[in-house]
Length: 281
Ligand SMILES: Nc1ncnc2c1ncn2[C@@H]1O[C@H](COP(=O)(O)OP(=O)(O)OP(=O)(O)O)[C@@H](O)[C@H]1O
Image 1: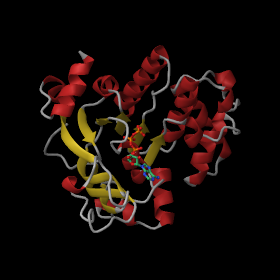
Image 2: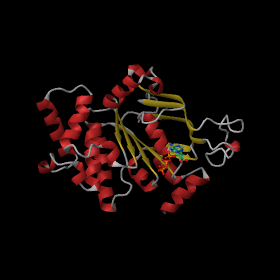
Image 3: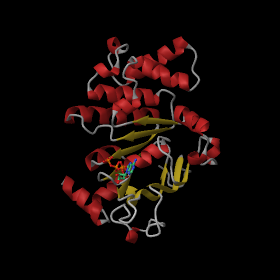
C-alpha cells in the first residue's frame, strides 16, 4: 500500500449508541461511563468516534474482546443497523462524496448489492437455507439487476468452484452443508457482484481448527487474486495476524490502537494490546 494513495473507504467520527443518553452521559465521555455503558440510564455507547481508512487491495483487521463494538460497526457499515452519527464514504460510489449512512434506504440497498459484500459469523444471516447454493448466488445477482439466466448460472458455477464447493452439490441447500461449506457459500455469494469492499465478521469463529485454516486460506487467496479490499473482524488475534495488513484494536467501543499488523505484533503500545499479543506467545 502506498501511504499517499487515496483511501477506498473512509470512516469518520462514527458513533453508535443504544439508548437516548441522559444528563450524566450525553457526551459519551469515558469518565462518565462504566465500560461502554452509562450507569444512570443504561445507554450503551457501542462505537465511539471511530476513524479509519481502508485502502485498495488491503485486508484491514479489527480485533477486540467480546462487546468491544466490532459487530455493531460492521452491521452499521452494511446498514443492518442505523449509525447514530458520523460518516462512511467509498471512493467508487458517487466519487466518495456521499455519506453512506445518510443515503436513502433505496440507495443503501443498491450499495449493499453492488458496492459491499458481507459474510456473517452466523450463515443463517447471510444465506437462504431453503434455496440451493447456486440459487443463493442468483438471488444476489437478481437483486443487483441481473436478468440473464444463463449468465447467472455461469457466474454461480464459477463462484462455487472458486470456493471449492463440489459441482454435484451446487443444487443442494446450504442447510445440508457443514459449517465450513456454509461459510464458503456465503463468501461466494458476497463476491457475486465483484464488490470493491468485502466485510467479514467472525467468519471462522466456531469452526474446527482445520476447517478454520481452510477458510482463512481461501480468504487470503481470494484477496490476492481479485484484489478486493476487506475488513475482517475477529476476537482472535491469531486470525487477524494471519490475514490483516493493518489492524485496528478496539476496546469498549473505541479504537485504542491502529497500525501495521507486524508493528502491532512486535511493539504493542496500549496495555490491552500488549495483553492480547503476549497471550499469543
Ligand atoms: N441491540 C442492542 N441493544 C443494546 N445494546 C446492544 C445491542 N447490540 C449490541 N449492544 C451492545 O453493544 C456493545 C457492542 O456489542 P457488539 O456485538 O458490537 O460487540 P462485539 O465486539 O462484536 O462482541 P461479540 O463478538 O461478542 O459480538 C455491547 O456492549 C453490546 O451489549
